Length: 359
Image 1 (cartoon, helix red, strand yellow):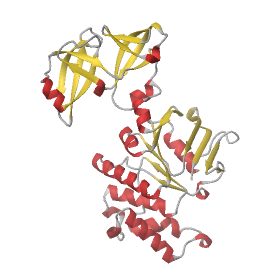
Image 2: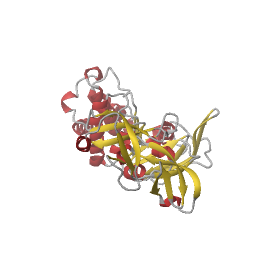
Image 3: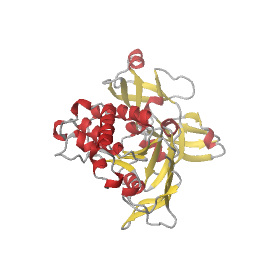
């Protein structure tokens, strides 16, 4: 069941939540809607669910498997929806919470009792909570409650599963566990799924593709590898992970930073213009001596070796500011680096944007 959104615009007063957004999710695909607060993620999800409607109905479309559902209410779209805060019924057992959407159907479309029980038991097995079927929500952990909420959304056999920050209320360790569980669940049931998150690690780990939103528009969409390794704009580069910014001058396909030249084919033809070089901390090489023409001097300000990698804060000796570098523990120990020492730095995988960029 594919989902397609075409040219959707949505405003709340003078605020533009969505500005002509178009997106297609293929059947069986898991797509993350990622972006900062106010970027339009939840509004887009609610519009797909039928909880919000476009302001431009004559131009906008929401399609489920090619069928136009733009003006069809949520109750008729067959979309399963799970929220951040579970919304479980406190007075109902786990079993009855999952069965709720089936039991409240009109009698002509309500499954027989034995069918309801069979479907709920199958879902309890899927979410690995069979022994807890008789418990109440207050007797469950946060992660268990969220699995029940997802099972309840799946019980009605939706065409599309829509998740609004499903793990946002959980602590970091439980979030990691449920991310793996959601990915495994999706591989088992292959239901077309969209989920909203502001957690970049979550999106990159779980999704088949990631759509990054900014100010009501989709800034870039692609596989996790594509958007991380080939960001389309300074905003995407800055939003996904840590990044250092180095001011430089571009001339004939190269940028000069700290007296060192770095080849940048994307600037071929540009002459003597200001530019900003984007470099991730793990793409910075540190040496004891000047190693070729692509190094410049810096001083180590601070070393943090807690965790699996060593994080260093450095300052450029030309007075152009500070930056961070990330080394493996082995490399850090081999170099025997200490705060206060002068070293040489080489930048790798440099990405250039013009100086008038906007983040």
